[in-house]
Length: 333
Image (cartoon, rainbow, N blue to C red; front, side):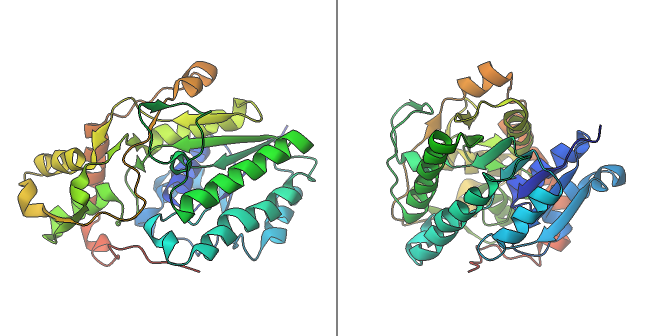
């Protein structure tokens, strides 16, 4: 019997594109949806897959804010049993500038989508990609039942959508699973993110501005590990549950940048300028991922230095192409 395709919303995002690659290489058919046209190939890991795998993917340019009905038609017509949603207005600092746009996409548009999805008979799983930003700054490791303490419009908008999904699960038995991954990275990531931005600073000689000296602590996890965990949640997650996806290694941003500089043979002081911290930046959120490990048999496999080496190799091999790409976030309304 033909297995229905997965539908992935936000397939242009690096997490979405990496998940698509993982799924099609596992033999799944995938329908991808994003508001923008497909990005250059250097930012789309699924375009690095073999032709046979790529043939299992189709793309549709649709904006969640304006084309929810069209997205719902795709799900219904293809009889999709699973939808995985990576789409969000995702920049933290910029959410202070136009907060209503963050609430429009991350709450209103999603509520509209979910209200349509719950009425589609074929749907058996909806995986919503949330964020640890909803917890704010925490001490120690954080489990999935941690109290929400959002400290930015971005975090508040994501927390609001999480709470809305909880009501849909309780009222309609909506088959939702949430995931939260801490600081994903890997080849193909947009250049304004800290790991590729540092690598490009070394390659180009342009100084990296390190906010607040880089003292906030994070756990960085490779895109391949996140994709595998997400597929396991899609296949075997328990409805109503949230799953953390994280490593157990925690480093400060400063330490991370120092590792990259050392691996590329550069002095930290030659690469970095320390600048003022951004408002509302959380000092730390360290996720406990034991539920994902114990319930779904998942484990992270890509070590930090190994993963960084892969980003460096990607940037060097595509340096001419990446030279034409912006190093800063470009907001889209």
